[in-house]
Length: 173
Image 1 (cartoon, rainbow, N blue to C red):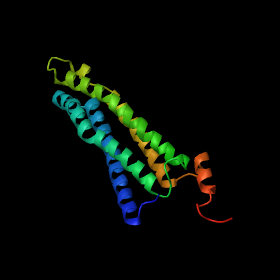
Image 2 (image 1 turned 135 degrees about the vertical axis):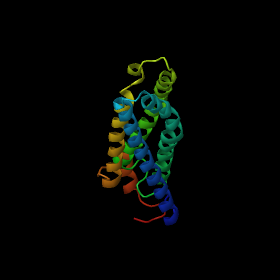
Image 3 (image 1 turned 30 degrees about the horizontal axis):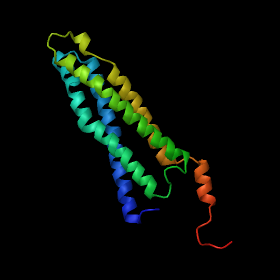
Image 4 (image 1 turned 180 degrees about the horizontal axis):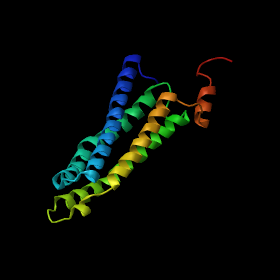
C-alpha cells in the first residue's frame, strides 16, 4: 500500500526534518560535552551538565521518537517497504537501538545534573567524558543511517524477493 504522492512527500519531508534535527541536536550535545570538559570556569562547567538533562528530554528524546515514527510511516507508505530491503531494516535497527540507548542514558544525565547542582562537589567530580563519548558515537551512528538513506545499497530481504516475484492478484499467466 503506497501513499498518494503528496502525502508521501509530506511524510518524507517530516522524516527528513526530524532526522536532521536529531543529528543536529546530537552535534550540539557533542559541543556542550566539549565545553564541559575544557572550560576553566566552574559555573560554565556546572551549567553544561545542568542543562543536558532537560535539553535531552525536550530535544533529543522527541527527535529520536519522531525520527523513528516518521521513518516507519515513510517506509510503510512508500515504495521501499519496511521489510523488503536490508538498508531499510538497518536504518530501523539503528533508530531503535539509538533510541533505547538514549532512554537508558537519561539516568546518567540525571546523575550528572545532580552532581553539578551540588555546590560542594569538586569540579573534577562534575566533569564527565561520558556525554562526549556517547554524543560522538551517536553522531557516527546517525551519519551511517543518513548514508544508508541516501545511497540505498542493493540487497533485498527474502521477504522482499517473495513480494517482488508475486503475481498481482487477479492477473492471468
